[in-house]
Length: 229
Image 1: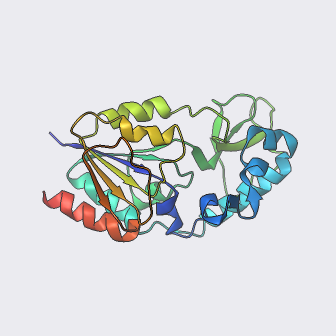
Image 2: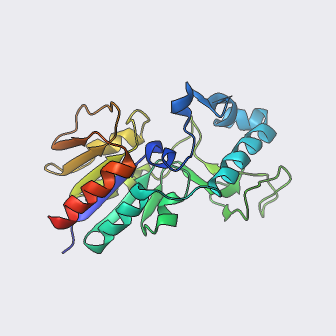
């Protein structure tokens, strides 16, 4: 029987492909406060600004490619059952070839109804226009979990994490909840690897090995080690 490897990925792995993160720019995301572009109030106040912001993020996503960190995780599927839980809204894991990816905070290339969150659509191209409507006639909004909104898939993520034999944490500061709490959802004895060049909050995580490295350097080495075990 194959062992279960679960990966919890954050902005750091995507940053190495050229995708901006608001934490790397003093609380600003491309010169915007998160409260102006990433909250329900921001959408109610100025949906055109929010749309422009996510259109720019989406347009950028079409210009970047997965990096060695993304591709290395695909190799794990030759030997293990691999599940990726990502805080990222890009599709770089999927582009690299990973087959099981759960997006906690939504997906940039999808949009949804502003009155019914269950009406979700793939967006053709990068531009969502203000006049674009769902089948019920309401304005379409980015399919993103904004600050202040519930994280619908957190329970599913907890169930996946609880089955892990190995947990790999990469590119996340473990400061954003409830995603950060997933590191404590593993069963006792689960081996946990943390791949990050910076300081990460690791209080309460047991059986932990820290790899002080970027995703593109550290993940390929870790994957090779796990495949040879």
